[in-house]
Length: 199
Image (tube, rainbow, N blue to C red):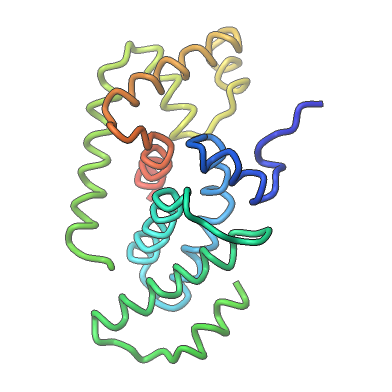
């Protein structure tokens, strides 16, 4: 029986995504993003900032993927990063009313700037432009997959097309997106875009 990526441990997934496997990284992203955002939200009480900080952490994970050192789980590294992000934000805003001990306690239970907001808007606009270049059916299939989070089989059933057609169209769409990125960080871009569309 073929092993699914979502069933792999962090260590096994790391073997894949440190070599640039975008699907393996996407599994890690989905595994930890909501938890990181929830931690930041508990302290900051601001959904937008909490989301931005969590995105920053995941971006750092992707950018540092070749240099990580951890045991079996990425959780300690990721939550240390989000804790530092929260502390930095509080210090910059001069609203350090939460003690480090309180942060640690919250952590156990669970640099935002104008540039970040601008980047989010630019990403969304870029996604729309790139998506619009696709043929109508391919555009619909890709949107259903990445934004509506439907499985390939669900898309095939809804559109009354073969499963292989869905896979081929998504693969072609990803190649189209890759042409717009020198570093080929397509997966992290699409993860963030999905979050922007689900605000």
